[in-house]
Image (cartoon, rainbow, N blue to C red; front, top):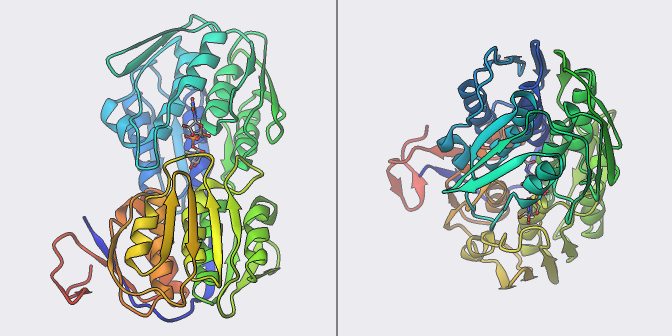
Amino acid sequence: MQGMWIRGGRPLRGVWRVSGAKNAALKMMAAALMATEKCVITDVPAINDVRTMMGVMRHLGADVQLHPNGRLDIVPPAVDAWEAPEHLVRQMRASVLVMGPVLAKTGRVRIALPGGCAIGPRPIDLHLRGLRLMGARIVEERGFVEAHAARLRGAEIQLDFPSVGATENLMMAATLATGTTVIRNAAREPEIIDLQTFLNSMGAKVVGAGTDTIRVVGVEGLRGARHAVMPDRIEAGTAMVAAAVTGGDIVVQNVIPEHLEAVTAKLREAGVEVAPAGPGGLRVRGSGRPRSFYVRTQPHPGFPTDMQPQFMALASVAEGSSIIKETVYTSRMKHADELRRMGADIVVDGSVAVVRGVERLTGAVVEAPDLRAGAALVPAGRAGDGEPVVEGPERSDRGYELFEEKLQAVGAEVRRMAEDTPVAGGRPLVSV
Ligand code: UD1
């Protein structure tokens, strides 16, 4: 495992420019498989999850090139391949998003079931139930799902839970089905609106994204399109908390403030100043210790689960006791152990954490249990007195573009350590 060494004790100040949204780009890549012509997607972050999706698409026969300026060219497969590569699907759950597009375009798909992960079990039953309602014959055996449908047909689908992935998979599949599909209790995340815009520019007929009812009128084919990915609201929120947790002052650029309302409201409740800073910018200033708060994660427009670890780090240094309730992924609390090693006072009972704020965190060697938790621990380390080392920062490379460069741009002293870096007293002797 790699390590990230951090010098604590100083506020972060400066400008943080947010990249394009991982959770929007990955879905557009899957959607582009349905086109008959080249698609160009811009503002695509150069992160490991995008590279994994590129691998899945190449395996399916697409020609995919990511340029240094974030432009992704996708030439869809000439021959209709239909088996997604098992090792890549197991690496990244979002690969399951190729299921709807490949089935809709080729009439069949075979994909490994994505495994459980550090934040708890994540089944795909809602995706499969929706596809069955659209006429797919689906067999699940020995860890694989195989689906067939000469042509999907429009259906009325009521989701038991507003799953982001199920909403997107079904919405994409429905674009090439016969007739009209209605998805009720759909997820309302902004990334779904961005996907709708992309699909419609390919010639699809989708309305309602951003509400709980999405209607798709199937079309005969989808053409090529060009689209710029929306800014990553979770990266923006992470930068905002980095300012707050260190008592710093950061201007976060390339944001859509409406996407960040739940995060902004919670930061203000904690006494952190959040103000507009020109078009597409927010200035976040923390002064002294934040006040304690109550957070309950929910589907959008509620408080995002992907910001829960960062807010647990913030609560760790707040005045008073905070309560954090996780309702989306019941076992997404592993970062509490790591924060505790840095001196935080946290009691976890099931999906509830009670965090009694301490004055300062201290240095320790801790491990980033997952992508978002890593992004919480690094700024938290900066809030403490010591020089913590966060192991496994490569997990955050899955979702954050140029993470340490962006931290350095706001004054953080952080250094990436290779797996075999000699360490003395927690300090890296060689940096990479
Ligand atoms: C997406 C995001 C992820 C975010 C999550 C919730 C991407 C690539 N990932 O994940 O960062 O944390 O939304 O905002 O966009 N569920 C089922 N059955 C299903 C599908 C989901 O029970 O068929 C459950 C899951 O186990 C989980 C909950 O629904 O408890 C939410 O999952 P979902 O909204 O589907 O998240 P993802 O699309 O996987």
